[in-house]
Length: 422
Ligand code: G6P
Ligand code: MN
Image 1 (cartoon, rainbow, N blue to C red):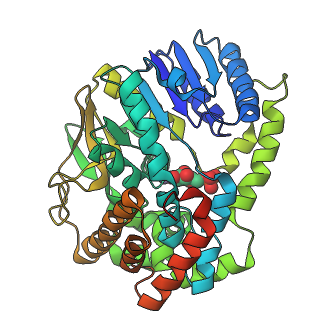
Image 2 (image 1 turned 135 degrees about the vertical axis):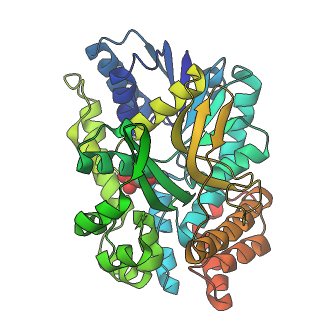
């Protein structure tokens, strides 16, 4: 099997390599290609990856290359983890919205919109090369944010794509840990849009059947659960479920904004960690995943990738949380919208499992953000200031016309070099 990572020079890549090395019985990879436009990153991350494979006794070949076409040629799976504009553009996403009293975040709100505008055209160009040069039945696994919008862009163009995020697998691992169970014994009632999800049940296999232990967890572990998503325990009790950490940007918007105004941005923090990591990756004595990597947000992301690819290529038919077409799963959204729910994964692809009806408040927020996402994708694909204004106004964290106008100006001013139409 040939697996290609586009954005392979990311400091996250050794996380993937570690997962692929540890789990090689599940997923035998012969060739692992890393594609990146940055030669220095390729040298450092490529070298580190080769040492890690060797140290783990993995027989696979790692090939770093700046050549996208050679990288994706005859690939079975192409994993997208690119970041247009790097951490510098992210720093912008995390700061300019403050001028209008909005939180700054790379996937949520005006900053997430800017990232979508920068990213969708690049991802679609990469995907065209995959279509032309990879194996005809190759899968695209998208980790590139904003995953919901990017995955929909890919599906709309007829690509064989599945979107993936580590939020769900993180919850599954944490719940399993609290319950003293293996992760595979825990199935999440995870529902919503990427980075806008709630855990509405925690099913545990019990004898012949399954039992929802979320009510018990919300009783016995309420403070811990609330602490992990940094939301008030009383909110979790009120909702009767566990919102993801990203819901904090909605439920605690003004509090987050206050915190952000006094703190360095996440982009700055990540840049610091990245400098340390790249130094270690350049050290020929280092051949295992450095502990500093745990300071990035990607916990378990290699496991999620291994699980998904193993089931798509090995026809396992197990249940995993992915980003996929709605097709009636959430009846209040269009069929072609991309949602994040548990799905059966086999060689034919991903099929959403049925989802219990959402309460009115959850459904309303999902529908509102989905409306914004549709307008945002339209703006990303077709460009134009008016499309940006329309999508900006539609975002629930923006909502007011004068603010949408100012945010549109700021977004364009900060991203001009990445927007072909601006
Ligand atoms: C989580 C999210 C990812 C996001 C990452 C950011 O893993 O699910 O979508 O890219 O955090 O991590 P970072 O270390 O870049 O802040
Ligand atoms: Mn994510």
